[in-house]
Image (cartoon, rainbow, N blue to C red):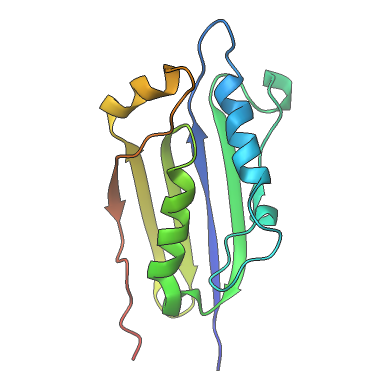
Length: 147
């Protein structure tokens, strides 16, 4: 019998320079829009993500909050590959922290968090900007022994 897994969370996008506070937000939007419409299992596709508009009434005061969520069949059996896809996405974005919640019918509730190495943020203001390549991970297991 198969089990449902629910994944949801957010990525807190970095704030831009005063001269163009939404520049990094636009770059993040382009990265999300470039995700595949359909992806092999475990899925990480464009439709899983939502990004509010650039002004406060549209949901962005300073930080861009990129929301995501999905319901999948037995994702815990392929959890490490899903985390690797998610981290590959983070390496393309301009962000400060990210949180993933996993609600699995078999493994229960798990929380995962990534935080950019503070020394990487200077790269966001380079010309051209460069995404962070180093971050810290904290949270639940990266593999589940379901055998």
